[in-house]
Image 1 (cartoon, one colour):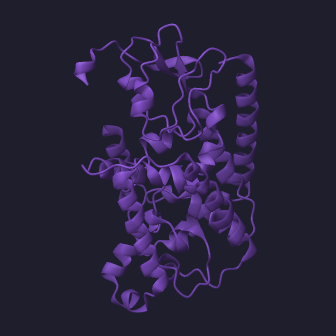
Image 2: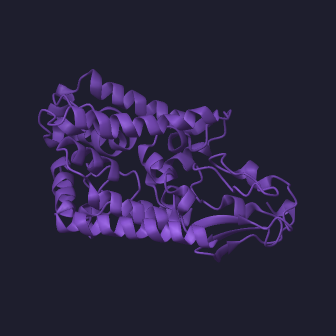
Image 3: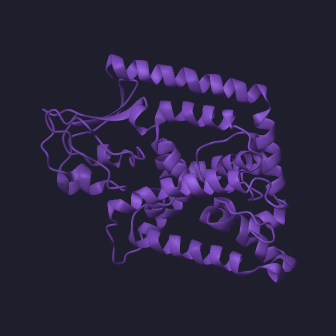
Length: 42
Length: 289
């Protein structure tokens, strides 16, 4: 991998990590779980 | 194959992980199914679009996985991918699907997973049974209208066990089942046809293909241009880099590494993760294959 590819991958990884943290902070994982349980008829 | 079987078991073992449905893993596996372990990213994205909420968690998680391993989940872990691989083993006439079909999945992602749920926001009720069969909800989204994985793992078991559900099944349910049969039939004659042409999750993960840390690398000095890797590629996406043209594959590459395994020249083709080789082709006589 060249330097440019590393920079792009690193920047995107940081962006996605930030989004993940924001999502977790705002309870997205709980919403996903609730939604999945609603769909599930078991 | 062993990895696919393990993932098939892991993603359908809800009794082992009852809290797993909070986790979005990029495999198409209906979480309406009682045994589904994790949450389907497409179903989750639709659910967020329906309430007009930005899915930070889903984008962040899928993005991170995409940057790390690209579409490797499609090639190694997706239960629906495994099913297609099995169906393609049926000996019959085979069809080489035109590459133009690949664009369909992006349209499905934009229209059925994002646009329509956003536009028709509060779909009239999302009661479990109604949602699974697509009945009486007014919902116009991928899960309700198209998803063959959902039909196979959610709708069919539900209809098989619930007489009331069967009684209320309408043209929408039957059209979903018909579509599922069509998709499975297509998988018999065209390899990984659903992944390439129809899977919105594949479309989503394909966006990270060009930037993932897991990638193919051809040693141009060792490569004999026998094109064996191109012939065995299940998604017909492999390019052999020549000179300045260094592209190894299109965004359809699911990193199954069939090309590496089938390469006859030692070290000519490898898979690298963050620059380190994780799988390297070995010298073999052609008759061994």
